Length: 350
Image (cartoon, rainbow, N blue to C red; front, top):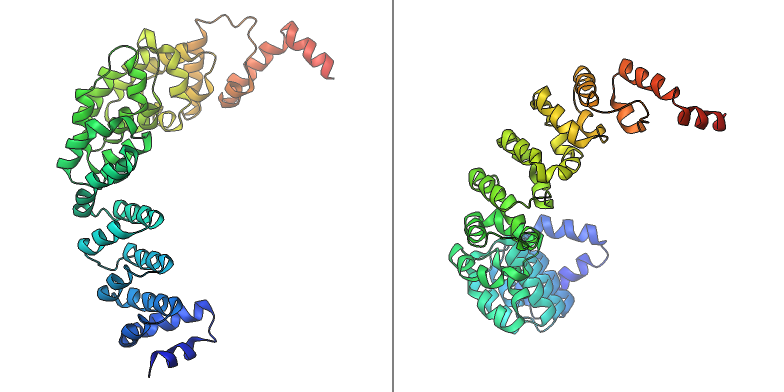
């Protein structure tokens, strides 16, 4: 059987039927690869499908140098799906590929964590295409390369890039963060960049991450990077998180924390007096604080918080009322109905 007969046998098949045909017979069909590799673009692409299933490295390596960019792209996709083509073959492709295919190659190297190839490519890639392009390869390189280049490339790493970098190279990210701890107004810029890498390294070194957060956290706010992990941070250091929130300069940030679902789900671990302290700061926005507590505790916290509040003319919104136990909600409803402003509103409504 020749390649021409193979082509006739699949000519009437739908795409799905053709894929199943190749998957079922890939090993037997590898004998056609040399002939298919000399055919037109369709035949060479058919050869890629066979070679991918059969893991024929030699054929894929050959068509990576195909003159048709579309065929090259299909061959690169096969590498991305596991055909074990060598770093040397991919390095040759990098040198010769058009820009669009080179971008796909770099993305594949990063996605597949081809560390040795990424380390070989990054300096040349940076020299040819700039720092932003080089950052796209940095997370896939080895530890020594990250330590060497991070100080020079940090300025163009995105928040998401910092998080990915910390997953693969947490020690290098934490070391860089320690050397660049912010002072004064630099804190905002630090938290918009490397701070995301610090918090992403929480599972790797929780003690180091907690220490960096305490040293770098702004006086009047909770950065987004901290809010992203506040639930897991509470698991590891509930007292430390509470102390951060209760600092007098940072109390305006407490509503952000108690509205965070991950933090709310963990509030039950705190004692009543600790929750009351948070509630007094968060007032009148108590819904987030109370939402995930047991009903009996909601009443206790609400009543303790409101002892220091003048409720005589206060009109509570629906959010805190909805989370109060039935008896407490009824008592507050009766109190508010007696207020002139509420009575007037009801009169106009009815």
